[in-house]
Amino acid sequence: MRNRLMTIMLGLMAFPLLFGAARADMSEAAYETINRAVISDHIRPAYDALARAAAELVEAEAVFEAAPSQESLAGVQGAYHGLMDAWMAVEHARFGPSMTDHRWDRFFYWPDKHNTGTRQMSKLLSEADPATLEAASFARGTAAIQGLPALERLLFSDGAAEKLLGADEAAAFRRQLVGAIAKNLSQMALEMAAEWSDPDGAWLQAVTAPGENNPQFADQRSVTLIFYRSLQRSLLRTSLFKLTRPLGESCAKPKPRRSESWRSARSLQNIEINLAALEKLYETDGGFAAQVTPAVDEEIRAGFQDVKERIDGIDQPLHMAVQDEALCAQIDQLRTAVQDLTETIKQRLGPALGLQTGFNSTDGD
Image (cartoon, rainbow, N blue to C red; front, side, top):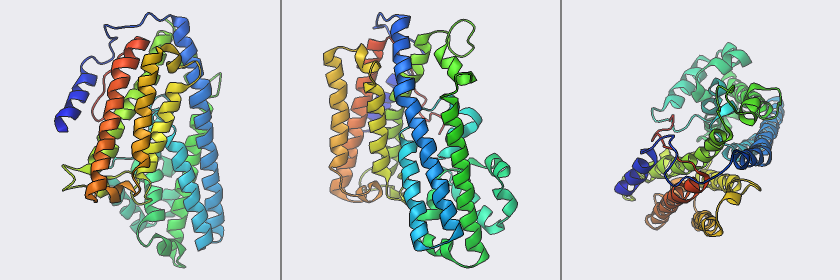
């Protein structure tokens, strides 16, 4: 399996940012059609949904902080899941507004290979300084305690309810920290959605008006490249981080707590939403799917369908499944299916679009 994974990685890294020999004969107008479709029908609605979900989290947290109870806490936990769903639908868009001011890492600092979040959270809770929770100060702090993983730790760790519902100052500070995280996430979500919608904004102008006077994009094809790259790299990131890390060296030695969002038992749900978003990116009317032959389209859609069916066949959370011999084998097969789809995208979609790209094995993680 390691040899297979290395082969895929080397293949993707072989010619970074170069266009392959099998380049399609596509016009600037064709690339522009793809770009407009992806922005208007896929990215912009997804970021609008993210902003709405973040606002709902703020509302639920306000109710909880005003009247802490099991019921109001359940409302915050439900809003967390809603925001996680929305984030997983835009997680692949790792460019533009999500990278400004390090928003991507601040929103979802994972994988946390050095356990920075645990150390920083412990320090913050032990000091319990209200000044650190002020909006401007909090947004400038470490990314490890600003986003969804930190919120998950507060809401779903063992004993979380008791620690949040207590009548002491420590519990009150925890509730205030939940509020600080919720407001911070909402602010970032609003900013990202606005930057994808503001016709006078620098980012939207950059992606909709490429050319010789554009410092970021020389032509429409270079814009299409970032969308194609997000599709390809997100698939590889899924196999490298979301599946390989919890699988460990083998099913005999799994690493369940390396699973993404294991405390809230939604690791597979995250992957399912990621894949659904990537499929939607591919299928967007007037987008990538419109530029390939029926045979290539069928192959790509079959790859997505294979992954979906394998996820549906796993009836336990991922961090539990990797500890079960039979289910662990299914997780390994799911990883193979994701790798196969990654290779199909590289070998079939890339040449059809006249695009090729490399992949940094860590991609910033």
